[in-house]
Length: 224
Image 1: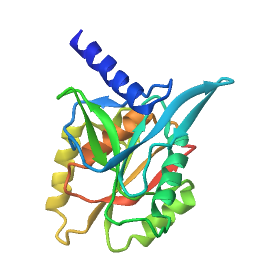
Image 2: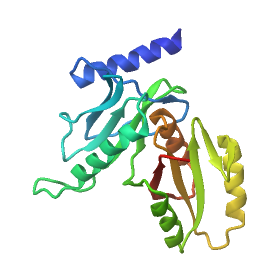
Image 3: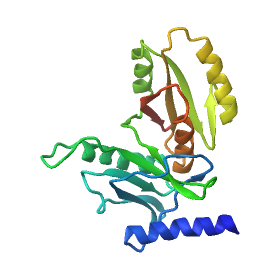
Image 4: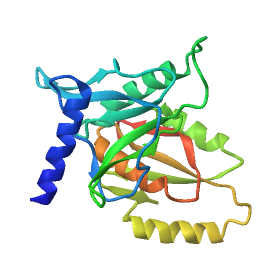
C-alpha cells in the first residue's frame, strides 16, 4: 500500500509540474542518486500511443537555457524513441547564444524506491552510433584504452556473453582492474534499440557509481 501511494504521489507531482493533462511514469529502482539541484528547469518526454505506434512526445516549453535541465522521461518508452530526443536536446543545449552562461548540466530523473524520493543522475554528453562498422571502428581506434564491452540485455547486464547481476559485475571489474597495470580501462556500453528506458537508466545509474570511466559513445544496434 505504501509503495502504491508513493507511485501515485510521483505521478501527481509530475502532473502538476508539467501544467498539462499528461503524466510521466518515471523509472523506479532502489539506488541513491543526486537528491536535488538548484537553478533548474524541466524537460518532459511523454509516452503516447497513436495508430498502434508508440511515440515519444517532447514538451520542452518549461526549459530555460541558462539553467540545469532535468529530463523527466517516461519509463515505458524504448531507446529508439528516446535517443533522437536526447540528441536533439544536447544540440539545443550546446547552441551558441549571447545570453547563454556556462556551467549548466543535464540530468535524468527517476524515483528512488529506497528513499521514496525523486533522484537525479548526471546526463553526460553522449554520442550514439548505430552500425556494426562504426562500432568496430570505435573499438579499433580506441588504442589508448582497454575496452570492456558491456551490454544492457533486458534487466540484466552482459559481460563476455554472460548475464551477470550488479554484484557479479563489480567482482569481475575489480579483477580486471587488478590486472590492469596501465590504468587505462574504459567501459563501452551497447544495447538493442528496443531496450526499455527503465532498464537503460537503471544500468546507467549503477554504472555511474563505479570508478572505471564510461565511454561517451554508446552503440544502439538493431539486429543481433
